[in-house]
Length: 209
Image (cartoon, rainbow, N blue to C red; front, side, top):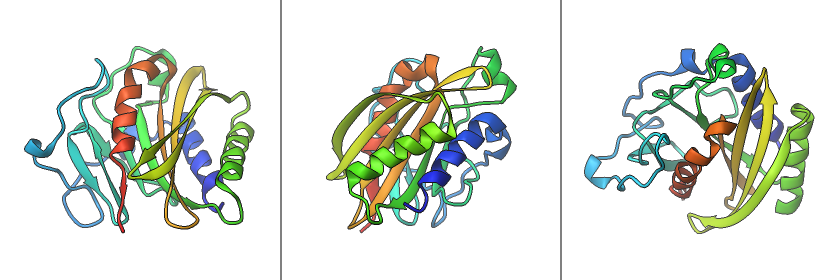
């Protein structure tokens, strides 16, 4: 597991550092960045109120693609993170979240099982998160297929600087020992509204062969 700890540190850094708002940049269409799909190719909106709209555009990176709402803009991803998208239109009345300029976001990172089984990897992932954020609680788990690949879903709740957050992680099996981790972070109070959208985005994830 070469990037798992980094993934978690990045998530903690974004939450407590409040860097999201200043790092968003308008996406451009070119290889390795974000390509906008024609509106006619976008699925119809099926998201809950407040979730930010349907996954209406195609985000294309060198190794994978996924669909995301148009207002989720790409932000400068730290080393070890392949993609970061932030809900640029999100507004909140949460005072603690406003202080750190938090907006709901997703990140995609590549990792490897190394000498671990998938089950061992998930336990290490949960252990690392609990060590990085004391008080983190895993509340639910699920499994499904994404791009015909076995995927484990972990839900967690964490608290930082007076605000409560919901984390939803999709751990997608790649080729051989490869693993892709799609992580969604939002305020706990918005978790139910965003859940359908997060699943839509994650289920659109495709690894390039």
